[in-house]
Amino acid sequence: MSRYEPPAYQPPRPYQPPPQQQQPYPYYPPQQVQHVIHHHQSPPKTTAVAVLLEVLPGLFLQTFGIGHLYAGNIGVGLLFMFGYWFVQFINLLLCFVLIGFITLPLTYLLALIISPILACNAAERANRAAGYR
Image 1 (spheres, rainbow, N blue to C red):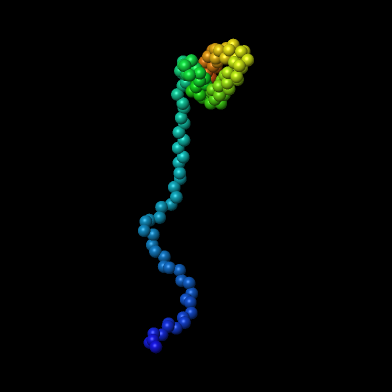
Image 2 (image 1 turned 60 degrees about the vertical axis):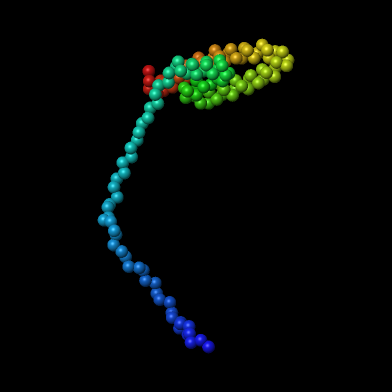
């Protein structure tokens, strides 16, 4: 047999919180937080750039609406872009009925004339709203 005797039962000791340690750093009272507000004003939109961004991609890639995106009219720019492609798709389908051969170039010319004018006006409105003359 073994000579080992298990330890006798001992009742649990009551909880004693650990001794509090001193703070390693001195206590600093809370300070006022100063909020800094930076006012950023976007640079003025050049109307010539808005017109060129409408004409050049529209002329070579048939992608209208980029000048409106530049001027800050995101919704109108996307509407011009996807709306033009949708109308041209309908005109392409109308080519099977032969009327599309007339409406397809007319839609292209109409977009090439109206879109830069509206982009120029949008850039002027964005400049006036930003406080530029």
